[in-house]
Length: 612
Image 1: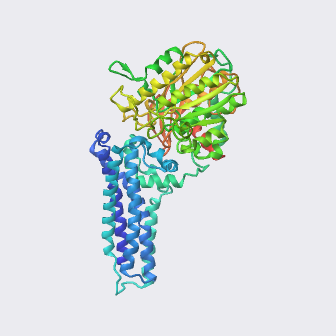
Image 2: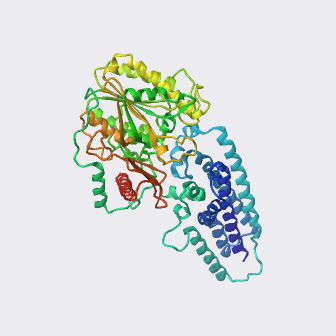
Image 3: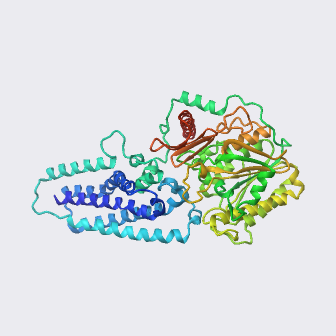
């Protein structure tokens, strides 16, 4: 009887420990929690118990197994406690670490811990570059405090276990009782007897995603996403393959029509500048009469400004693929994680290399981060210059060299390339406007705005250097953000305000200034650019020509297992986990259209990656 009670006690204490994470989370993010009523906050804990019970079941499996084996194998109380103490310490450290990391990362990611973090462990230096002491200290305190609670709580229940001299039940009876208890634990782990096993959507109860995220157990979120890191073709199956193909072809616009010509030359030298975290939420701001990005705003007036462009994702690795390959981001995984697939993608660099262009990529940090180098080399970039190659006499930030020295180096490289007979495609990824937003500059008190202004100034100086050279006449400079930014901090990932980004074409190769109001995604850059150069973009099946009158005009993006669709008719956000609309601003007819189109795109992207 004591054996059974000891396992039950471990389970009950584990449930309490898991449930305790909810009020800790709500207090940690008190500024956002304050927006909700007490009943809504209570429902966070109530609904969260579903996955808390599941995780408690996992934590109780080893204690149950040890207790079950002790029925047939004599096990002293001393040996039992040694084994269990070892188990308790290992489990407590792992769980406490995940809880602390999740609590700190949610501020940046706006979703609970999942297997995404595993992609960054291969480059721990770069992964830690965004972390400040203000993040680390409270996380360490939480880790130590939660660890102490787990160790004390679970160690306390060890006292229940006793080697009973007088057995109330024979061994067969004890075994049967333990198997029955094991069956109950299995039900807890599975999430009950319903056809659908435990999953994150089970705790979703609100239209507000913050409340749903608060109810989610981060341990379950991490373990479940890690378990499904290998994609299953059966996921995201909303339509038959034939129907999905039909919808997808409609979204592509069928036969390509005549595109509006906006360039003076079919073979300009092309410079692509990926601006780190340059969301319209910051670049459009004017603070006390001072523009945050005055140079970018000037270029918008002088060149071609795309006013309704939306980032396909919220991370640099996914935004890079969307921009260079015209390949929208998957709701869960980064295609860079699958080199065998990433290398098969079409790309602007690869297509231009076939047309005789020299192709290059520069980044002031580590280009190996998140398999970036592998993707770039595999899709047509011939030369990569990163931090290790630069060896500049300048200090580095946590991410690498700041944009002032890198922009100067890149400016000179472009001028040297312009002297060659061979046309070129040169690309640059900036980095200073990335958290922790530490730059040698002091234009604004706000660190995010200050770092954005710093990058804007360095890019502006670089472009002025080109403008004053002979290279300018046949130069096309494309400036586009890799993704948006949550500014202010309460702007959630996935919302249109978070996803809207600038794109500007400028340079001597541009015919005239123009404002383009058509809705599009950054993945549409590939086909749009190649069409202007009269080069085939047939391989870029997910990319549309923004200047073509025949092709549908809309923006599409994905975020943590969800997607957004926007056009002149309105917008819609859909949660693939909870299988429900999160937010919308459109009529009922448009809602069905957006759902149909968004689901078809997600299904098509998923199928394409699964064919890797």
